[in-house]
Image 1 (cartoon, rainbow over the protein chains, first blue to last red):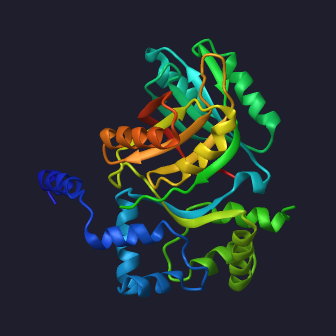
Image 2: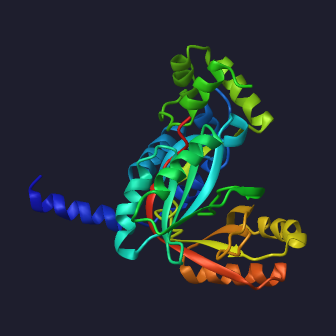
Length: 166
Length: 153
């Protein structure tokens, strides 16, 4: 394929961002538990009235397109002996990228977002101990690019259910 | 407490599973146990509440949910539980927590609100506010994602 043709097909695949009805049905179903059976995909494909091979093919494409990040188990960190917390940081707008990079160095940081508020960087930590969390926060506190840092641990959980009706 | 084998399994199944017809057999091999033994353990984790969900994790932006807002309310301590339960009932909300307040950050009730547009999120926040009866709130849209990964066990 010539370079030009390659370019065209690339832009077409980007344009093809709409999800068809089958993709939507698959995505809505797969955000619930997969069956805990030897052949989970066979069971799901029966539910969706399609063949197992079509299902696997579609899921593969959805993963390639980055719409599905992963198919994996999500645990309750607390029950697995981990501690989680939310941290908010104030940094000058010019410094946010640099600061975010320094925060992301810690493998215990799972989510990190730039948000439009006086505290503008928000991230979550899931670590093995309170001590480790304290250590990470202490390290970041020493960073002169960080103006202020507050830890906001959860006192009560009312809901956790990530499920997008696609 | 969790055994070494449990920890090994938790590590294994927290990662993206291969797209094969018998994924549990593949994972069981890696854990050094039988397929059915792995499935039984997974079922037990689910029953004990260790396992929240074994499912697809979406990139919600790419799935059309471009806007995500962290909405925070200042709710008096005596009303937090009632308000939290109301917020939990909204399907647009994925997470809802009560958190500690700070001087200069006087919010204690947090909800992650998702929508296809910012406007949708703003509307949802307004609806929530009306329903819980507290109007001191703030909407923090995420303008960039610096990191999003699964937990590394």
